[in-house]
Length: 435
Image 1 (cartoon, rainbow, N blue to C red):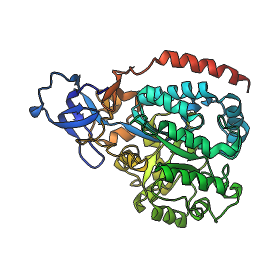
Image 2 (tube, helix red, strand yellow):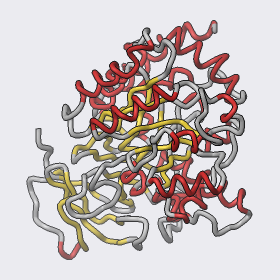
Image 3 (cartoon, rainbow, N blue to C red):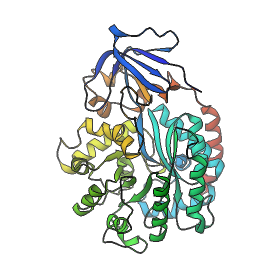
Image 4 (tube, rainbow, N blue to C red):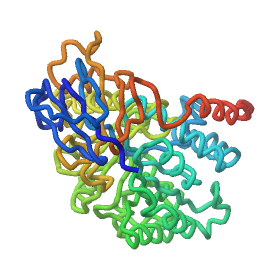
């Protein structure tokens, strides 16, 4: 169903990360797209449109979360203060084996969707198992998503026979490709230490055949090279290069431990990198060289990772951490300026995920927009969009529009019953108290 037009008046516009703020503006959404905008002296007469007052508010592109495991909201706070190997092998993998099923993925993904919408995220790249249920939940929530089905070389939720790990993903793609314009299915090969070279090649071949994104966790920890299955190169990135997995449809998640040769390999390939700074800090994985990669021209995007290793899904907080950790790592206050950080969660992520006409405010672009309240102490005075990175947080978001439809209005979620979702998740969480 075509959404009703929306006219937002008297608003400040952040159109993109290279342009100054535009004050006293109107913006019209029509047919799920940004139709036009301009100064209030030229506001059109559009009586059929839903009217929103943007006084003392900022309108900007919705944020894009480049990496999440949405259903892992169930494991938030389950195993804190552990390094990655113990966290995964002693806690997360056993919890997933015992508790991940279709019901869990559906309801816990909906919880993640609520948290993201309420904090201004309109698009997410998700990667998990029972991904058909994640796609269903994200679709029903109103979000835009790249939903990537997980692949590992051991029995996994929904894929008890590892021999079916590729065919299960092919079935998922067949079910969701072209089903809804907001949902793009994709392939998620977990890592080179859970997938053999043969599995990685087959997973990438499927993604290439279907012309869809291919995601992989890579170079997250200093020790990763030692645990790779049958290493084909001297580093995790060299391993992927030797297997011909790197191209501009490959999304490399984490990339904390790279040398100059690795970065040159990524740059030459055209692959994109998603950094998850808060997860990296919590798991003591390290700090990625995001600023250096950005300067080289490697596409750099931003993700939260899952709730079990973050533990929140507020991209505004993630933006602040990204910018400041890059300054700390380089001891340069000019590393990763606020505008470049903000681009990672908007236009950069749109490009990395292969979603056209997204991440900016421009005529013809998708109407994925968020309206923030500016008239509050921590955002005053509001000189520039830099304050979104260093002062903003998700609680500033009042209204969210996705694909031209209002899904959050004055902080009230309209797309589904949040109380019902919370009740389901609380019920699902009760058995985990005994793990």
